[in-house]
Image (cartoon, rainbow, N blue to C red; front, side, top):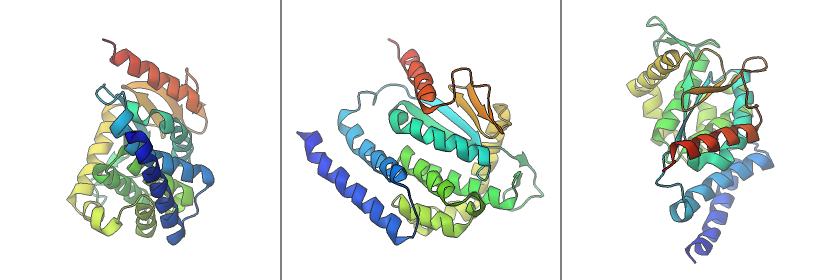
Amino acid sequence: MKILALIPAAAVLGSWLCAICTAVGVAITTANKRALLQGQEQVIFDAVTDGTKHKKRVPVTLGVMSKCPDAEIFESVFDKTLADVDSLVDLRLTYIGQLNETMQPYGVECKHGPSECDGNVQQLCVAAHARTQKEWWNFIQCQNFQNLNKVGDVSLATQCAKVVGRDWVADFSDCYTGSEGRSLLQDSVKFAQAANITKSATLLVNDQLVCIRDGAWKDCPSGHAPEDFKRVIRDEFNRINQQ
């Protein structure tokens, strides 16, 4: 009975999200709207029905650069993966760059220029202060959908924060403009270096290389389609949760 009672709430959330998208002028495809709605429904239903709630999640790392075309391609494929395995994974994005104290304000040099560092920090700050994993993931999908050239613009970050039901200034701006954002980016770059992630995009599942997108799909022995990634994640989830 609890599940049935929550279904109308999920529908209201879906309508609310779509209304926000229209208000800010962000064009989102039917598939993206469905993904956003599914993300909100997942939050509701997980609280009641998720049998994986007390099991270990699989650590999943995606090494990217926020303005990299290969990262955009990989993230669009992984979006279809995450729709079905969100409750099984502890997902993090780590950003590829070079530590360089002469490059201000972050002390990091980004391959696609300073605006990519801005985009990296925006995404890290949303991830750090998001209410759910899907919330920050949908923020990134919104940025990708607009145009990679706009990633890093505060105006786009503001729009995409509204799409996921947050206020950029109230919720994320202090992180983005302050020392927290700088630390998040530097720590992320250090993590990528320690994990030997040099190509955008690189997928690790429980610290094991699963696939790379670098001009083409490379080093993907299990395949590079959403169903392939789902299978790898589910297999690893079952393995680490064996009694």
